[in-house]
Structures are given as C-alpha cells and as structure tokens.
Image (cartoon, rainbow, N blue to C red):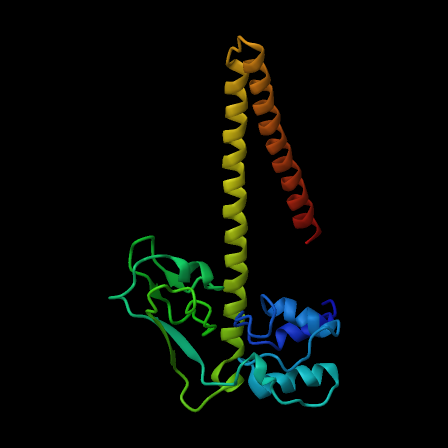
Length: 229
C-alpha cells in the first residue's frame, strides 16, 4: 500500500463537511494549503478543537485554539426546509455540496437528513428564508458530534456530485457542439446571391467553426486531465 502524502493525511483528519468555512472551496484544497504552508491548521470549525489536535499531531506542531474568524465550534446542525414557504427555486440544491437536497423547479424541496453535513451553504441563497439549521447533537460539538463513517460518506457524496456536475457539463457542451455543427451544415446549404450575403455567410461560418474548435480543444484538455488523474 503506497504511503499517503501529507495532504492525504491532513484531508483524512478533516470532517469532510465541505462547508468552505476554512476559506477554501472544499476540504481537499484546505488540506493541500495546510500541507504547503499557505493555510493554518486551526481554520476548521466543524472539526473543532479535536480536529485541530488531529492536524497538529500529523504536522508535529503545537495545539492552537480555533481561529474564530472562521466560525465557532458548535453542535452539529441539519438543514430543515419550511416546506410551506418553499418556492422551488432550486438555489439550495445548487449550493449543497453533497446533494442532500431533492426537488425540482417550482416544486417543493426537502432535505435528506442522513446526507446533510450541516454546512450552512443552502441558507444564504434561499430567497424566501425558509431554511433553518437545527442542532441534532445536544451537548456534542466538533468531532464528538461527527464520526469517521459520516465523514467518509460526506466525502463520497461530494465526489459523486462533482462527477455529476462534470458529466452534465460535458453533455451540455456536446449538445451545443452538435447544434453548432448542424447550423454550420445549414449555412453551407444556403444559397447566397449578393456579395453582402456571401460575406455575412462566411462570417457566420467562421464564428461557428471557431466555436466548434474551442469546444474540441476544451474536450481534449479535459480528457488529458482525466487521464492524468
């Protein structure tokens, strides 16, 4: 079994709530920032003081207090939607890092409590303020309110969501490329009588061809990055 990198070890010590309170977009970038010395190891409120102790142990550094500018250690909350007020805007669904919210446009949304990490990210986007964060671990905070199984599940859900978003983007890009190619064929078939019509047709063809080429190069880059991983 290969030895884990420092970033891997640090990531494994984080609770995987993907809450961004540390100042980074997810737990992995924060772990990498700690590993390269650009972030301190006391910026994760969900992990609390025990989380800092875990990170300090890995780094061989002294225990620090939680940096309160990133939030406070608290009882683990779960998001709850007041369904009577939900307007089905889907903004909370887009914000949830672990796909713990289900619903459809203009339809009532609901939280899957077993998947919710208590990250708070769904609260701010809600235009009707119908989402509340309710504590579910009375008297228990930080890692005492969390566990390794929940962290593993949250990390898996986060990765599944990232894969879904990438897949949906690729499918959308492919649809747009196909539409552009069809438009290019349609332009080729059009007859142009005047010099002005011919010039306009050529401009449109050049624009569409350039868009198709950009899409092709972007796909090549994405495929290359996927192969590196």
